[in-house]
Length: 617
Ligand code: F6R
Image 1 (cartoon, protein in one colour):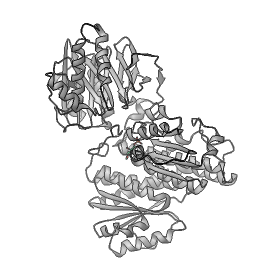
Image 2 (cartoon, helix red, strand yellow; image 1 turned 60 degrees about the vertical axis):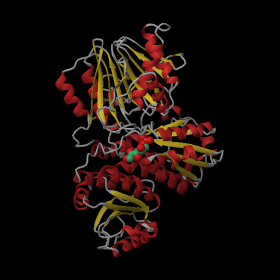
Image 3 (cartoon, rainbow, N blue to C red; image 1 turned 60 degrees about the horizontal axis):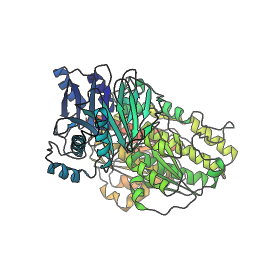
Image 4 (spheres, rainbow, N blue to C red; image 1 turned 135 degrees about the vertical axis):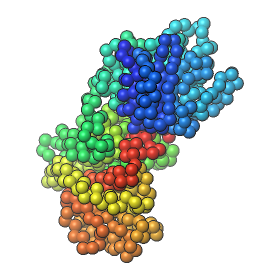
């Protein structure tokens, strides 16, 4: 949800900001813009559309500057136009501001500022914020001189703001300086040699430095090429902790792949290996988690688990629920984070609370975490981005360790969440009734998952050919049972988000209670058909579809005895342990939606209306 980047230093800010914006573009791609310092002037160039449009414009104008800010937008307030693109400049021309987040009380502030003679060129909440800074700056000349006046006006403004923000601000009176601040929107400072880069995430700065400071909510950072300082909104000094990034720029490159999504799909065997490395006990019968910050004894006392997440991560929670209940026999509840935060649901005191989030910045998941903590629960996070807000605020957690996921459609993060969910189920089960030998069998199955995923990926050419035949359909059903019902939801979500094909996921037997009305020769169904004790029931559901002329794509394990001529297409996946099945079953639906999107000419890595990290409510 919007990417921001700011640079102060001795190098050409234009190319550094543009490179940062290209790497942040997955956060939003409605428009892009920069503001560069040119002597005592602020030069703004901004355009609706992709960063490439902006780059062309900047190339034509041959800008140079050593201080600047840039933004890539996911529209909230106001349509996708040049005028609504960031940066926004205050009506007195003194300030330029970029913003990620939502200012909830902007309408009142706008009315107030309009009464004071301020004017507005856009429909955005951001321009209001920028003018409020100008207002406070104009009011403060005598009391706060020099650099502090810049900081003070921002501090004052932020005290009046309701909502969320990650901002970077330039001021004509303070050349070579940037002020940044955050509340519930991510902001990270890259500490280089005689240069600093402020960005929404590390991908925008990792090519210049691996030393970073994760800013916290309520902190304001002041940058010049020589130094930085961090204070709180209440003016307390903050001693910064400089962390080392553990990944390099190559991790966020597409390499030989056409799209990040393709790269991330094919990276999954290695990603799973990384996610499980060092996480099994020496006797090979259970999982080990270093960062839970809760003793095995306390964990053992928990009588329920609650999982909250959004989107694909929510699907991973549903699979985890199935595995914990199946193997550990402990009740689990799963809720959408966005619902949980307002539902005020009754929770048993001996509940261990988990949130799952690849980015660690999803605002609803973060809010669910905070709500659970407010109620006195300990909250564990399953999270991929080190140092994210969720990672910092949770009481303990498990990192996914799969490297940056750039493709907007989650793939490797999803399968690693499934893997970690399966490991949590094992950990809980081994504390209860699961035998040592069943534990060893389970661990060996998990260790074999990367190889099984490798085998499933070999079906790519076949799936590509199927995608060609099915790309023109407008509707599709995804049907699965038990641990593969959430995979049906995930398959439908993947197809919807990158191919714009209407798709629905259902438990296969529920299909009779409504969705079967959609079935015709124009609506194919994708069936998960693993060999299991309910295999015959799945076959019956397939027969019901076939009787109504619905085309069928079956995703069946190698040992599943599918009757001849029942399915129009059969994609075989290796037979596997129940805990690994959802991970392996994810591969064909990821590939199917990817290839269908390509056939339909969709922009796979930048699907319309979406952004990778949803930092607004
Ligand atoms: C879909 C997708 C989203 C995310 C959701 C949560 O492919 O990526 O549904 O899963 O926005 O994101 P995180 O995991 O970052 O909290």
